[in-house]
Amino acid sequence: MRKPLVSTLAAALFGAAALAGIAAAPAVAADHGKGTPSFEGTVALSNCSGSVVKLKHSKPSDPALVLSNGHCLQEGMPGAGEVVVNKKTSRDFTLLNADGSDAGKIHSDKIAYATMTDTDISLYETTSTYKEIKKKYGIDALKLDAKHPRQGRDITVVSGYWKETFSCAVDGFAHRLKEADWTWKDSIRYTMACQTKGGTSGSPVIDDRTGKVVGVNNTHNEDGERCTLNNPCEVDKSGKVTVRYLNAYGQQTYLINSCFGRGNQLDLDARRCALPEPAK
Image (cartoon, rainbow, N blue to C red; front, side, top):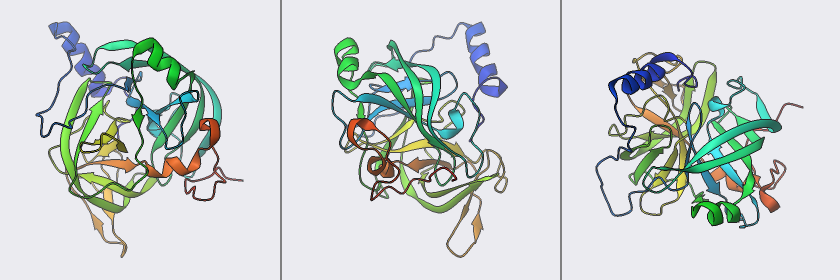
């Protein structure tokens, strides 16, 4: 996990590219199946990536939701144990076409939910409905899978920030993934082919076979360090710690479906909802 891109190496890379006159054309990884996803429905944030997602019971008339990471909030990264619910905000997202070109802007006035506890997600409620986005831009939202991702399946991490894709497979799952003060449960471990970078945070992790979102990209071990910032470590059920240098990870998203009800409104009291709640 990198802090949101405001300066640091990623900004330097952008600056160098601009000075060199390099065009920001979409970069697509090698195709490993006809189901390899496009950029349609993904978004670029000011500091991260994201996607417009449709939940299991979402309707065309519902306000569209944008999925990204909790650590991508403009307001700063939530602390361990902190949960943000229905908070006013003002944020624009650049919506992408299938070929990675800019389709236009969508706006949010509310963070419906965000946390870095147990998982690393943010969900913005936009001021546009799915139907309005489809009518204005011709773009469909990505569907959020309601099932647990499967080991061995081909996946693609689609970054709206970089307009770049990363293709690999689900290597397995980390019982606990610990990074600095934060701990995440049942994280998706990618095979080594997905070498993500700063700015890919918040990218949808898409199952190539179904085309559905099964996770949200959030971190990788950059330096081989143990459980430090930008160097997550895995902790198994017995407490054994494993460091996997250069391995990248994402957080599962199927749990989100059970926590939003009619009108795409957050309902943390729903029967099957297991997302963390704000401290009372």
